[in-house]
Picture 1: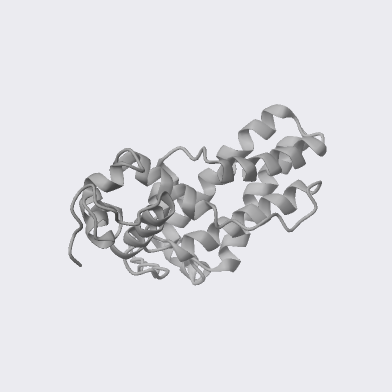
Picture 2: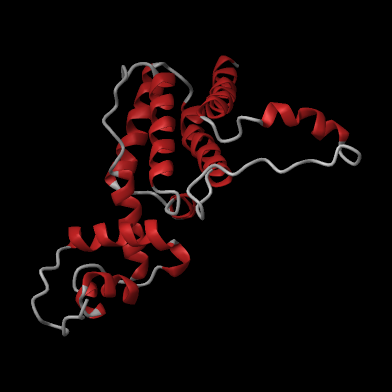
Amino acid sequence: MARRAQGTAAGLTRERIVAAAVALVDRDGLERFGVRRLADDLGVDPMSIYNHIKGKAALLDSVSEAVLAELPDVAHDAGDWEAVARWTAHSYREIACRHPRVIPLLATRPQTSPTALAALETLVTAMRAAALPDRLIADTPLLLFGFLNGYLLAAISAETDTVPTVPEIDATRYPALAALAPQLADFGSVAEFDRLLDAVLAGIRCRAAR
């Protein structure tokens, strides 16, 4: 596609730029993302993009915001904090499966978009309605998303868009780990995700009980 000259009408909008940026990250990954490559995809001069979004950092934040905007509306009773937490976790996992190359961005940059804050607001509101301690409520987003980001970075391969296999373990050197290998057969599955999420939520319940 021929690049338009700077300053000519290119039909650009912020929404079109962000959609193209998400598509570029999905296709090529964060390492190859850049304003010039994005401009090539849009068929515009790079300076035309800067008229709408000021710099690469702002573009990356816009990609995060656009992906998180795919979170559906809460489908559970807002008074049931565990149901809200599970909905949030599974919705976030679904986004990761659709956009595996965006997950490192979500995990490493502050998420302060209205969509991200609205999801957290729903969760903490449900926890306060359940009369959980404020200290525990304040810690929960870090606990939950620390687990989500770490797990999803490990379990979803950004390069192949598939769940990686568990490597074979040398039973002569690591017998205890090798004995547990059959328990790792469902690595990356929804069933494993639910088990680990159960452990996280059980820890929160345990703290609340104290």
